[in-house]
Image 1 (cartoon, one colour):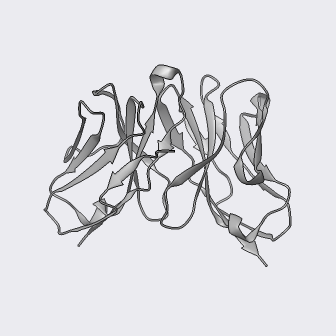
Image 2: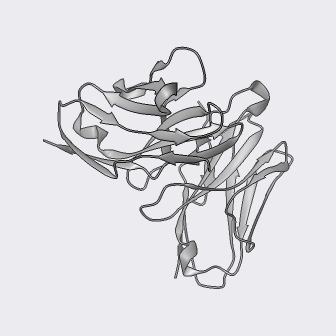
Image 3: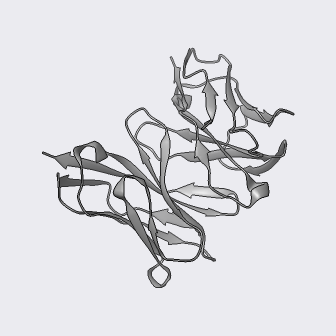
Length: 111
Length: 114
C-alpha cells in the first residue's frame, strides 16, 4: 500500500543545533516529494520540493532535503535551528495530482 | 503575489446544520483540492477538481459535496454536521496544465461544530 512515514512524532533541539527530520515513502514509482511547515492554527507553507534532477534540494528559511531513492527517503535538514522554526513539519508525496501527507513531526526548540 | 483565499476563516455551527466553505484559487490555477485536518492530525485529502470536473476523491463523507465553478472557485458543502466534523479545512490549488504538481495552500477555514 502507498504510504508516507514520519517516524518521529516529536523532536526537541536546542537553538543553534542541527536538525534532521525523517521521511520515508512507499510508492510504486518515484513520487513528487514535498516538505511543508505549519505553525499553530496556520496554513501549510511549502519549504521545498523535489520533482527530478539534483537529489539535494534547497528550500526557504535555510532548509534543505535530500532524496535517496535506494532508501525511499526524503529527509529534511537545517544546519542551525532558530527559535522561530518551532512548528509542525509535514512530509508529503504526490503521484500526479494525488497528494498524501505524513503524520507530521512537531519540532520544539529549546533556548 | 496572489495566494489561495478561503472564506470564512472561522465558522461555528451546531450539530445537524449545514455549512459552505469557499475557496478561490490562485489566478490561472486549474486544479483545486480540499483537505480536512483534525486536531493534531495530518491533512486528509477529501476531493479535487480539475477544470471544473471532479478529478479525484478521497475520504470525503457522503454528507459532503463540492464543486468547482466556471471562475474556478470551489465550494465545499457540508450537511448534517457532526461534532467530529470540527476541523481545519484547507483548500489548495495548482496549475496542472503547466505541468506543476505543486500545491499552494490557503490559510484554512476552522469549523467548530457544537
